[in-house]
Image (cartoon, rainbow, N blue to C red):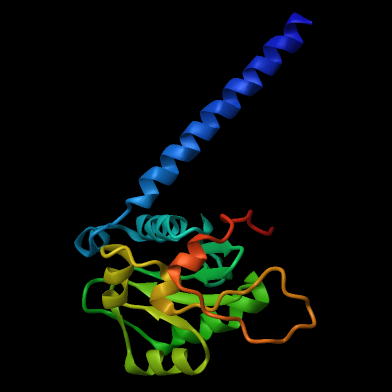
Length: 198
């Protein structure tokens, strides 16, 4: 009996610590505004972590998955109103450009392999003109140096930056009506992030 009581107390303490840690992380992320200079100084894995944290700041449940053989996904996020996002992170030397080849690869894996609703390539450098044109034509989002500054330093939410359509989770499967755009006030009133699909 005493062992069972001690076990229950241990579980209660563990849950309280986890809740406190979770609240502290949410509070820390709410004020997250990394500078572009600071982002330039990161290594590849740290850049992926920074993008994961920026997504979390904006209400996504996000995890870092980048590794050898990641099939063009470094960060995957889920949001109940925005869907699933796949983010390949391209940390470069300032002045380097990401080309169309990266866009082709991401487009080929984001939906079929990762089940993404949204594909977004992010770099602290820039994109070639062809990569941007191809991305726009094929509904691929691209965040280069200027957009990254607005998202990270200025704290503009990703859905506002990219004008992402909100998908209503209560919509019937047969309803083919176009998803509507909501402003940040409406989106922040939406339920919090949901758990990631496996």
